[in-house]
Length: 417
Image 1 (cartoon, rainbow, N blue to C red):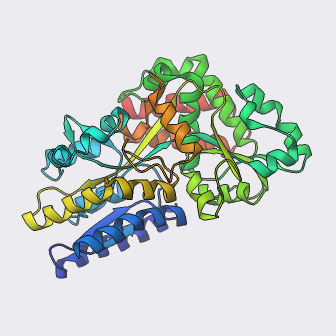
Image 2 (image 1 turned 180 degrees about the vertical axis):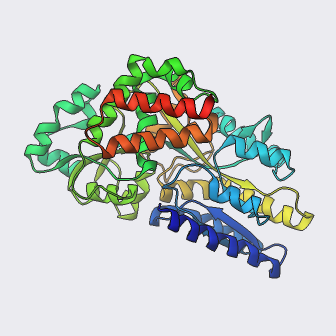
Image 3 (image 1 turned 120 degrees about the vertical axis):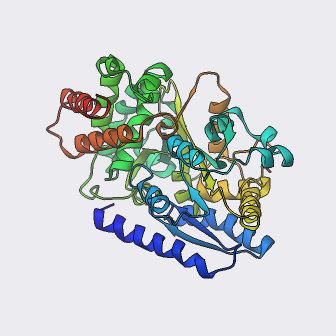
C-alpha cells in the first residue's frame, strides 16, 4: 500500500470513528484489515447476525493488510478515537491497551458461556496475553500452504500430492513449464514476501530455529545457521518464478491466476481457499491443498478481534454480544467456509468442512509441529524489517543470499543495539 493510500484510508477510518458521537451508545465502530470478496463475505456473516439479533449497528472501515504492523489502528488510539471492535495481532499492542485500561478481558464471558473448553490449545495460547483473554478468535489459518489447480496438474502430467520434499517439487518444474504454465504464481508486495519467508522458515528450519529468529529479541547467531540460508535460497528460487504481471499484484489476484489455469500453484496462507470458494470451486475437485513439501513445522495464525475496554456498561454489553456472535459454533463454521479458514472451536458443525480443513486440524494435533505467527511473539519493527528485506530480495534478482543475510544483520543492529 502506498503512503498516500494509507493516509487516505486512515483519514476515512478516523472520520468514521469520530462520527459515532452522534449515534446511539450501542452503535459500534469496527476497524479491520480485510478487503477482498471472500474476506468481506465472511465478515458479513458475523455483522449481519449481530445486527439482526441485537438491533445494534456496526459501522466498519478498513485498511487492507498488505502492510505490516498495527500503525493505522495505533494512530486511532493515539488520536483519541479508538474503535469499539478491531482486528489486531500484535501481542504488545494488547499489552499496551491493558496497561492503559483500554483492553477488554473476555475470559469471564468465555468461561461462563462454555467457549473456553471448546477451544484447542493453539487458539487459547494465541488469544491469551499475560494471563488474560484479550482476543476473540475467529479463524485459524496456516501461513504457508500449497494450493494447486487440479486441471493444470492433470494437463502437465504432475501429481503434487506425491511430493515429499522440495526437491520433489522442483523436479516437476520443467514439466509444468513445458506444458505452457507458470510453475508458481507470486504476487508483489511486502506482505506476501514476508509471509512466504516465515512460512518457509518454519517448514525448512523447524521450530527451534524459527523461534530463535522470531524471538522478542532474536538470537543474532541464527542468521548464520545453514537452515536460514537454505530458507532464503528457497525464497529466492520461488521469487524467480515471477511473471511480467507480478509487481503490485495482491495475493487474491495471484490466486486468480491459478484459478484461471495460468499457473500450477501458489504458496501462501490458506485463506487462498476463500478465493477459490468465491469462484465456486471445490476442494478435491477443482483444487488441491498440501503442506509445503517436507514441512518440519507450520506457522499458525489465529485471526482475532479485540474489544475496547473502559467503556460504559451499555457499550460493554453490546461489545460482549458481538464477541458471542463471533464464537458462536454455527457462525464460526459459516465464517470459515467463506474465509477459507478452519474453525476456532472443536464443536462446530462439520457439514461445511473439507479436506483442507482436515489437513489443518491434523497438523494442529501433532506435537511440536506448530509455531506462532511472528506477530504474536516478535518485535513489530523486526517483522517490518524482515518483510522489507524479503521484498527487496524479491525485486532485485542481482541480490545474493549473502546480501540478504547481510541486510538482516544490519536491520537487527539498527533495532536491537
